Amino acid sequence: MKVLVTGGLGYIGSHTCVELLQNNYEVIVIDNLSNSEVSVITRIEKITNKKITFYKGDLLNKFDIQQVFQQNEIDAVLHFAASKSVNESVKNPVKYYKNNISSMVNLLEVMEDFNVKKFIFSSSAAVYGSTTQQPISELVDTQAMNPYGQTKVIGEDFLNDLYISDNEWSIVVLRYFNPIGAHESGLLGEQPNGTPNNLMPLITQVASKKRRLLYVFGNDYNTTDGTGVRDYIHVVDLAKGHVSAVQKLLLTHGLHTYNLGTGEGYSVLEIINTFEKVNNVNIHYEIVDRRAGDPAVCFANPAKAKEELEWSAERTLEDMCRDSWQWEKALENNILPSRK
Image (cartoon, one colour):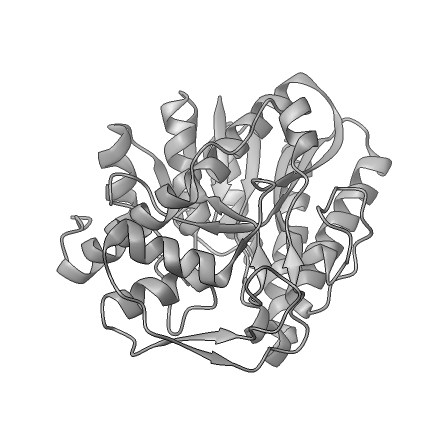
Protein backbone atom coordinates (compact mmCIF):
# COMPACT_ATOMS: atom_id res chain seq x y z
CA MET A 1 0.00 0.00 0.00
CA LYS A 2 1.38 3.42 -1.01
CA VAL A 3 0.82 6.37 1.31
CA LEU A 4 1.64 10.00 0.65
CA VAL A 5 2.93 11.92 3.67
CA THR A 6 2.81 15.71 3.30
CA GLY A 7 5.34 17.48 5.49
CA GLY A 8 6.93 14.09 6.00
CA LEU A 9 10.37 15.43 6.92
CA GLY A 10 9.07 17.49 9.84
CA TYR A 11 9.07 16.47 13.50
CA ILE A 12 5.91 14.36 13.66
CA GLY A 13 5.87 13.49 9.97
CA SER A 14 9.36 11.97 10.00
CA HIS A 15 8.63 9.77 13.01
CA THR A 16 5.41 8.65 11.33
CA CYS A 17 7.33 7.75 8.17
CA VAL A 18 9.53 5.46 10.29
CA GLU A 19 6.53 3.67 11.77
CA LEU A 20 4.83 3.34 8.37
CA LEU A 21 7.95 1.86 6.78
CA GLN A 22 8.40 -0.55 9.68
CA ASN A 23 4.82 -1.69 9.09
CA ASN A 24 5.58 -2.38 5.40
CA TYR A 25 3.85 0.62 3.84
CA GLU A 26 5.45 2.27 0.81
CA VAL A 27 6.06 5.89 1.73
CA ILE A 28 6.10 8.91 -0.57
CA VAL A 29 6.93 12.30 0.95
CA ILE A 30 6.28 15.81 -0.30
CA ASP A 31 7.86 18.62 1.73
CA ASN A 32 8.87 22.19 0.90
CA LEU A 33 11.70 22.09 3.49
CA SER A 34 10.50 25.31 5.13
CA ASN A 35 10.84 23.77 8.59
CA SER A 36 12.86 20.63 7.86
CA GLU A 37 15.92 19.50 5.98
CA VAL A 38 16.65 16.91 3.32
CA SER A 39 19.11 15.03 5.59
CA VAL A 40 16.09 13.66 7.47
CA ILE A 41 15.61 11.26 4.54
CA THR A 42 18.97 9.64 5.27
CA ARG A 43 18.11 9.29 8.95
CA ILE A 44 14.70 7.72 8.26
CA GLU A 45 16.30 5.26 5.85
CA LYS A 46 19.10 4.44 8.30
CA ILE A 47 16.60 3.61 11.07
CA THR A 48 14.35 1.48 8.86
CA ASN A 49 16.78 0.15 6.25
CA LYS A 50 14.09 1.06 3.70
CA LYS A 51 13.79 3.74 1.05
CA ILE A 52 11.27 6.54 0.71
CA THR A 53 10.34 8.46 -2.44
CA PHE A 54 10.83 12.19 -1.94
CA TYR A 55 9.45 15.20 -3.79
CA LYS A 56 10.49 18.72 -2.93
CA GLY A 57 7.25 20.57 -3.49
CA ASP A 58 4.80 23.05 -2.04
CA LEU A 59 1.11 22.30 -1.56
CA LEU A 60 0.34 25.90 -2.49
CA ASN A 61 1.52 24.95 -5.99
CA LYS A 62 -1.12 22.60 -7.37
CA PHE A 63 1.25 21.39 -10.11
CA ASP A 64 3.62 20.01 -7.46
CA ILE A 65 0.82 17.89 -6.02
CA GLN A 66 -0.42 16.73 -9.42
CA GLN A 67 3.07 15.57 -10.33
CA VAL A 68 3.19 13.27 -7.28
CA PHE A 69 -0.18 11.71 -8.10
CA GLN A 70 0.62 11.33 -11.79
CA GLN A 71 3.80 9.41 -11.02
CA ASN A 72 2.49 7.21 -8.18
CA GLU A 73 -0.61 5.13 -7.50
CA ILE A 74 -1.39 6.51 -4.06
CA ASP A 75 -3.84 4.75 -1.75
CA ALA A 76 -4.03 7.18 1.19
CA VAL A 77 -2.73 10.58 2.30
CA LEU A 78 -1.44 11.64 5.71
CA HIS A 79 -1.48 15.44 5.86
CA PHE A 80 1.05 17.03 8.23
CA ALA A 81 2.21 20.02 6.16
CA ALA A 82 1.19 23.21 7.95
CA SER A 83 2.51 26.21 9.84
CA LYS A 84 2.22 25.52 13.55
CA SER A 85 3.34 28.37 15.82
CA VAL A 86 0.55 29.86 17.92
CA ASN A 87 2.51 33.08 18.56
CA GLU A 88 3.42 33.52 14.91
CA SER A 89 -0.17 32.88 13.86
CA VAL A 90 -1.34 35.78 16.03
CA LYS A 91 1.24 38.10 14.46
CA ASN A 92 0.75 36.86 10.89
CA PRO A 93 -2.71 35.32 10.43
CA VAL A 94 -2.62 35.77 6.63
CA LYS A 95 0.32 33.36 6.40
CA TYR A 96 -1.49 30.80 8.52
CA TYR A 97 -4.79 30.86 6.65
CA LYS A 98 -2.91 30.67 3.34
CA ASN A 99 -0.51 27.88 4.34
CA ASN A 100 -2.94 25.79 6.34
CA ILE A 101 -6.21 26.24 4.45
CA SER A 102 -5.35 27.02 0.81
CA SER A 103 -2.81 24.20 0.67
CA MET A 104 -5.33 21.73 2.06
CA VAL A 105 -7.93 22.78 -0.53
CA ASN A 106 -5.36 22.18 -3.29
CA LEU A 107 -4.45 18.77 -1.89
CA LEU A 108 -8.03 17.56 -1.57
CA GLU A 109 -8.93 18.82 -5.04
CA VAL A 110 -6.12 16.77 -6.56
CA MET A 111 -7.10 13.76 -4.47
CA GLU A 112 -10.61 14.00 -5.88
CA ASP A 113 -9.25 14.28 -9.41
CA PHE A 114 -7.32 11.03 -8.93
CA ASN A 115 -10.12 9.33 -6.96
CA VAL A 116 -8.01 8.94 -3.82
CA LYS A 117 -10.43 9.26 -0.89
CA LYS A 118 -8.56 8.06 2.19
CA PHE A 119 -7.24 10.95 4.29
CA ILE A 120 -5.70 11.51 7.73
CA PHE A 121 -5.68 15.08 9.03
CA SER A 122 -3.14 16.35 11.52
CA SER A 123 -5.26 18.44 13.89
CA SER A 124 -4.56 19.71 17.39
CA ALA A 125 -5.89 20.07 20.92
CA ALA A 126 -5.74 23.79 20.13
CA VAL A 127 -9.23 23.36 18.64
CA TYR A 128 -10.60 23.04 22.20
CA GLY A 129 -9.43 26.50 23.27
CA SER A 130 -9.67 27.18 27.01
CA THR A 131 -12.36 24.65 27.89
CA THR A 132 -12.70 23.89 31.59
CA GLN A 133 -13.88 20.34 30.92
CA GLN A 134 -11.07 17.98 31.96
CA PRO A 135 -10.19 15.47 30.74
CA ILE A 136 -11.17 16.60 27.26
CA SER A 137 -13.19 14.21 25.12
CA GLU A 138 -13.87 14.54 21.42
CA LEU A 139 -17.40 15.72 22.27
CA VAL A 140 -16.17 19.01 23.77
CA ASP A 141 -17.07 21.97 21.56
CA THR A 142 -14.31 23.46 19.45
CA GLN A 143 -13.52 27.07 20.37
CA ALA A 144 -10.03 27.88 19.13
CA MET A 145 -8.44 30.98 20.65
CA ASN A 146 -5.84 31.84 17.98
CA PRO A 147 -5.45 31.74 14.19
CA TYR A 148 -3.42 28.51 14.28
CA GLY A 149 -6.14 26.69 16.21
CA GLN A 150 -8.81 28.26 14.03
CA THR A 151 -7.16 26.89 10.88
CA LYS A 152 -7.45 23.42 12.39
CA VAL A 153 -11.14 23.97 13.20
CA ILE A 154 -11.75 25.16 9.64
CA GLY A 155 -9.86 22.16 8.30
CA GLU A 156 -12.02 19.81 10.34
CA ASP A 157 -15.21 21.58 9.22
CA PHE A 158 -14.08 21.37 5.61
CA LEU A 159 -13.54 17.62 5.93
CA ASN A 160 -16.96 17.18 7.51
CA ASP A 161 -18.58 19.03 4.59
CA LEU A 162 -16.55 16.97 2.14
CA TYR A 163 -17.76 13.72 3.65
CA ILE A 164 -21.38 14.90 3.69
CA SER A 165 -21.07 15.67 -0.03
CA ASP A 166 -19.49 12.30 -0.86
CA ASN A 167 -19.68 9.46 1.65
CA GLU A 168 -17.14 7.37 -0.25
CA TRP A 169 -14.50 9.30 1.66
CA SER A 170 -12.74 7.69 4.61
CA ILE A 171 -11.32 10.40 6.87
CA VAL A 172 -9.59 10.30 10.24
CA VAL A 173 -8.97 13.49 12.21
CA LEU A 174 -6.28 13.21 14.89
CA ARG A 175 -6.18 15.86 17.60
CA TYR A 176 -2.69 15.89 19.11
CA PHE A 177 -1.98 17.05 22.61
CA ASN A 178 1.68 17.91 23.41
CA PRO A 179 4.20 15.78 21.52
CA ILE A 180 7.71 15.69 22.95
CA GLY A 181 10.62 13.25 22.90
CA ALA A 182 12.61 11.86 20.00
CA HIS A 183 13.37 8.57 18.32
CA GLU A 184 15.31 6.28 20.63
CA SER A 185 18.04 5.93 17.98
CA GLY A 186 18.95 9.59 18.50
CA LEU A 187 18.62 10.16 14.75
CA LEU A 188 15.27 11.98 14.69
CA GLY A 189 13.83 14.69 16.90
CA GLU A 190 12.45 18.19 17.06
CA GLN A 191 14.67 20.82 15.43
CA PRO A 192 12.75 24.11 15.40
CA ASN A 193 13.93 27.13 13.47
CA GLY A 194 14.71 30.11 15.70
CA THR A 195 13.31 30.29 19.22
CA PRO A 196 11.31 27.15 20.07
CA ASN A 197 7.61 27.52 20.80
CA ASN A 198 7.36 24.33 22.86
CA LEU A 199 8.61 23.47 26.34
CA MET A 200 10.92 20.51 25.75
CA PRO A 201 13.23 22.08 23.13
CA LEU A 202 13.64 25.05 25.48
CA ILE A 203 14.58 22.70 28.32
CA THR A 204 17.12 20.81 26.22
CA GLN A 205 18.66 24.05 24.97
CA VAL A 206 19.10 25.26 28.55
CA ALA A 207 20.61 21.89 29.48
CA SER A 208 23.11 22.17 26.60
CA LYS A 209 23.84 25.81 27.52
CA LYS A 210 22.57 27.14 24.20
CA ARG A 211 20.10 29.14 26.28
CA ARG A 212 20.82 30.79 29.66
CA LEU A 213 17.56 29.92 31.40
CA LEU A 214 14.00 28.76 30.95
CA TYR A 215 11.06 31.07 31.61
CA VAL A 216 8.15 29.40 33.41
CA PHE A 217 4.98 31.37 32.76
CA GLY A 218 3.05 31.53 36.01
CA ASN A 219 3.20 29.56 39.28
CA ASP A 220 -0.16 30.67 40.69
CA TYR A 221 -2.51 28.34 38.81
CA ASN A 222 -4.84 26.05 40.71
CA THR A 223 -2.59 23.01 40.21
CA THR A 224 -0.42 20.87 42.49
CA ASP A 225 2.60 23.16 42.21
CA GLY A 226 1.03 26.26 40.65
CA THR A 227 2.42 25.72 37.14
CA GLY A 228 0.40 24.82 34.08
CA VAL A 229 -0.50 21.18 33.45
CA ARG A 230 -0.47 19.59 29.98
CA ASP A 231 -0.81 16.15 28.42
CA TYR A 232 2.64 15.32 27.03
CA ILE A 233 2.88 12.38 24.64
CA HIS A 234 5.99 10.73 23.23
CA VAL A 235 6.29 11.49 19.51
CA VAL A 236 6.85 7.79 18.72
CA ASP A 237 3.57 6.89 20.43
CA LEU A 238 1.93 9.64 18.40
CA ALA A 239 3.44 8.25 15.21
CA LYS A 240 2.16 4.77 16.03
CA GLY A 241 -1.30 6.30 16.41
CA HIS A 242 -1.13 7.28 12.74
CA VAL A 243 -0.40 3.71 11.70
CA SER A 244 -3.49 2.62 13.63
CA ALA A 245 -5.43 5.37 11.86
CA VAL A 246 -4.31 4.12 8.43
CA GLN A 247 -5.56 0.66 9.36
CA LYS A 248 -8.88 2.28 10.33
CA LEU A 249 -9.09 3.90 6.88
CA LEU A 250 -8.80 0.51 5.23
CA LEU A 251 -11.67 -0.98 7.22
CA THR A 252 -14.39 1.66 7.00
CA HIS A 253 -15.77 4.76 5.35
CA GLY A 254 -16.84 7.77 7.35
CA LEU A 255 -15.28 10.62 9.29
CA HIS A 256 -13.77 9.70 12.65
CA THR A 257 -12.13 12.05 15.17
CA TYR A 258 -9.72 10.96 17.91
CA ASN A 259 -7.67 12.54 20.66
CA LEU A 260 -4.07 11.34 20.76
CA GLY A 261 -2.79 11.88 24.28
CA THR A 262 -1.82 9.90 27.36
CA GLY A 263 -4.76 10.92 29.53
CA GLU A 264 -2.34 12.20 32.19
CA GLY A 265 -1.35 15.76 32.98
CA TYR A 266 2.14 16.86 34.00
CA SER A 267 3.03 20.30 35.28
CA VAL A 268 5.90 22.38 33.92
CA LEU A 269 7.88 21.84 37.12
CA GLU A 270 7.25 18.09 36.97
CA ILE A 271 8.72 18.05 33.48
CA ILE A 272 11.76 20.06 34.60
CA ASN A 273 12.35 17.94 37.70
CA THR A 274 11.99 14.66 35.80
CA PHE A 275 14.36 15.86 33.08
CA GLU A 276 16.97 16.82 35.69
CA LYS A 277 16.66 13.50 37.50
CA VAL A 278 16.70 11.23 34.44
CA ASN A 279 19.57 13.01 32.71
CA ASN A 280 21.57 14.24 35.72
CA VAL A 281 21.63 17.85 34.53
CA ASN A 282 20.51 21.16 36.02
CA ILE A 283 17.86 23.33 34.39
CA HIS A 284 18.03 26.98 35.39
CA TYR A 285 14.60 28.57 35.26
CA GLU A 286 12.82 31.73 36.31
CA ILE A 287 9.16 32.20 37.19
CA VAL A 288 7.56 35.04 35.24
CA ASP A 289 4.00 36.26 34.75
CA ARG A 290 1.38 34.09 33.10
CA ARG A 291 0.83 34.36 29.38
CA ALA A 292 -2.60 35.63 28.36
CA GLY A 293 -4.94 32.84 27.34
CA ASP A 294 -2.97 29.93 28.80
CA PRO A 295 -5.36 27.50 30.54
CA ALA A 296 -4.30 26.05 33.88
CA VAL A 297 -4.93 22.43 32.87
CA CYS A 298 -5.34 20.62 29.56
CA PHE A 299 -5.25 16.85 29.14
CA ALA A 300 -6.96 14.29 26.97
CA ASN A 301 -9.54 11.61 27.40
CA PRO A 302 -8.01 9.07 24.97
CA ALA A 303 -10.61 6.33 25.56
CA LYS A 304 -12.12 6.54 22.06
CA ALA A 305 -8.75 5.96 20.38
CA LYS A 306 -8.08 3.02 22.67
CA GLU A 307 -11.43 1.43 21.89
CA GLU A 308 -11.72 2.10 18.16
CA LEU A 309 -8.09 2.29 17.02
CA GLU A 310 -6.76 -0.21 19.57
CA TRP A 311 -4.06 2.34 20.32
CA SER A 312 -2.77 3.83 23.54
CA ALA A 313 0.39 5.66 24.57
CA GLU A 314 3.03 3.38 26.11
CA ARG A 315 6.11 5.51 26.78
CA THR A 316 6.67 7.21 30.13
CA LEU A 317 7.61 10.76 31.00
CA GLU A 318 11.08 9.44 31.83
CA ASP A 319 11.34 8.03 28.30
CA MET A 320 10.31 11.38 26.84
CA CYS A 321 12.95 13.25 28.84
CA ARG A 322 15.71 10.73 28.17
CA ASP A 323 15.11 10.58 24.42
CA SER A 324 14.83 14.38 24.14
CA TRP A 325 18.21 14.84 25.79
CA GLN A 326 19.85 12.16 23.64
CA TRP A 327 18.60 13.97 20.55
CA GLU A 328 19.85 17.36 21.79
CA LYS A 329 23.31 15.88 22.43
CA ALA A 330 23.37 14.44 18.91
CA LEU A 331 22.61 17.91 17.54
CA GLU A 332 25.20 19.51 19.82
CA ASN A 333 27.93 17.06 18.84
CA ASN A 334 27.04 17.23 15.13
CA ILE A 335 26.99 13.44 14.78
CA LEU A 336 23.87 13.13 12.61
CA PRO A 337 24.32 11.62 9.15
CA SER A 338 23.79 13.94 6.20
CA ARG A 339 22.32 13.21 2.79
CA LYS A 340 24.92 12.66 0.06
